[in-house]
Image: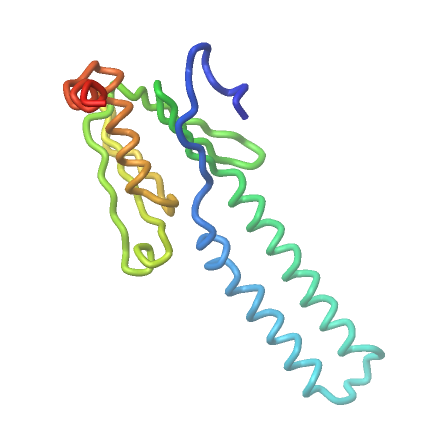
Length: 170
């Protein structure tokens, strides 16, 4: 993945959405598997040979395909922070890529729900000069770390006093 970097660019962070995205998507396959198990355990003779086996296999197959699709969609979203830009990539068949130059970042806000605070994920909103509205990075693992690194890289890129003071004290 480092081949996506520009010459002289350094990778700071690269991540996918938090695993909670996959867990939230498990509701449908779990319900489907429970329904297949209920049919398998309660249905007597229907006149169709091997009806219970067919229902069970169909339920397992659909749930398996659902899980594969969820996994691929989860893996297809990537958030990358370098010392020069923030890159947001998404898409399985068609690929979308959004670049935010780090020196154009004006504000970086984090929002975390109670569950997000407990599990370590949240939402990061990045406001950039010249952009219409904030760019949203949803279900980002460790959003505070990402926000802090955006600030550090932005200040470093601009030659800000906060970074110079911090490094001169070492």
